[in-house]
Length: 179
Image (cartoon, rainbow, N blue to C red):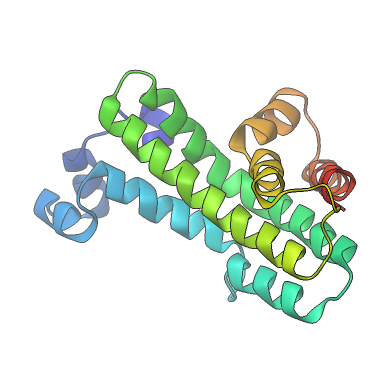
């Protein structure tokens, strides 16, 4: 409903009716539209299959000593997750332009992504894989940028790249920038 009607036009009441529950249930379960967006984003970030993408990523980082293989796996994750999560993040971005409450939600979601990317950058740094002139904050910013919904929008939605090409581009760019 958010994607078809837009954030502002989608009401909790309409969501409740479509779900066959009361609006109170939606509010109690999610705390309103921002909570629903968080839940949608979290579900999208889990990826496909029985093991959430974040756990799969952490497992690769723990068992794989070659940082290029780790980052190539991240490219695969970006290609898997971007079609699921980017539309909702782009919806939030667009709604944030006119709604201060949604702007706060966008800031929160961006901060969450930056934290995940900082954790990834820290693991690369701690394993001695980052270039010597690469500070942690810059490495995190690079990962944050290459995992952005805007890059997905530009290359896949606007330029028509395949997800495979997009994922390979992201991995290659990260490798060149970080290692």
